[in-house]
Image 1 (cartoon, rainbow, N blue to C red):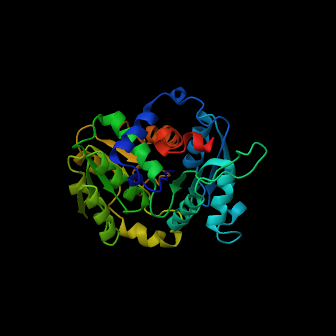
Image 2 (image 1 turned 60 degrees about the vertical axis):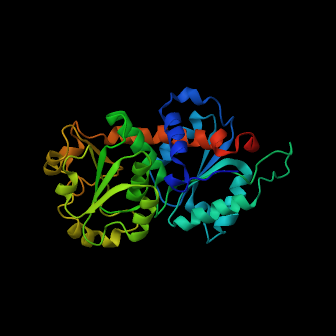
Image 3 (image 1 turned 120 degrees about the vertical axis):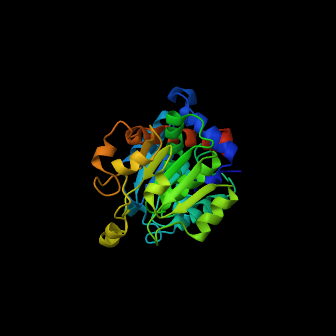
Length: 325
C-alpha cells in the first residue's frame, strides 16, 4: 500500500523515528534509491527553503526533480486536482505539492490511490504507475516537512527530547499544528502562547489529545516561556493573509521573542524560526542573530529531513519500492 504524508501524524511514532534516522544519516547512505526517476514538485505558492531542499533531496537520492509552477497546471482551473495527480503519477516516483488548500492534497492522494498501482503501457511496458506517494510541502492546514526539520534540529541541540519543553509563541497556524503533533509524538511538552482569537481550536486540541500530547495553552508569552528548553515562533502574517497585517500586528504586540522572553527560558535555551522572519515583529534582530539562534541550522535541516522522508517513502517504509521502479 502506497503511503502519503499530508501531515506528520500520517506516520506512526515508530515510523517517525525511522524517518528521522534516515534524515540524520550521511547523504550517501541512501544510495541511488531513485535511479534517475523523476519527482514532481508542484508549487501553487512560492518558496525558497522548500524548493531548494526538495530539489536537492531528490538529487541526493539519484532522482530528477521537476519543478511545476501552479500556473502551469492550473489546479481546478485548467484541470482538476485529480487529473493533475493522475497525469504526474504516470511520470514520477512521487508527487510533492505546496498548495493553497489542504483539501487539494487529500483529493490528489485519493486519485492516485484509485489508480490501484496499475502501470500504463509504454515502450518497455513499465513506465509510470498510479500508486505513488503524495507529500505535503505546505498547505493552509499543515507543514509536516518543516516539523521533521524542527525535530532533527532539536535533537541535535538537546539530545533525547522526551520530557523537554518547547514553547511556541504566536499564531496557532499550519506550522504550529504540525510542530505540536511532532512534539507529542516524541514525548515533548508543548506550551503555546497566543493572543485571544489566535489560539488552537477544539479540533486541534482533540487531535493532540489522541496523540497523548502534554500541551498547555496560554496568553502570556513570558509565563509560557519560563523554563522552556526551546522557543519557537513564526511570522504573525502568513502568505495570503496580507490584508490582515495591520490587525495582526496590533493583536500580536508583545508576542515577539526578544531578550525578555529569552531570559525567562531555561539557561541555554535554543531559538527556532521556520523563516522568513520579520525582525522587530515576531523576533528581535538581536535574538535572531544571537548564539542562541538555531534558525540557520534549522533551515539547513530542511534538506536532510526531506531526504529522510523521501528515502523512507520510496524505500520499504513507503510501500512502493520496486512497484514504482
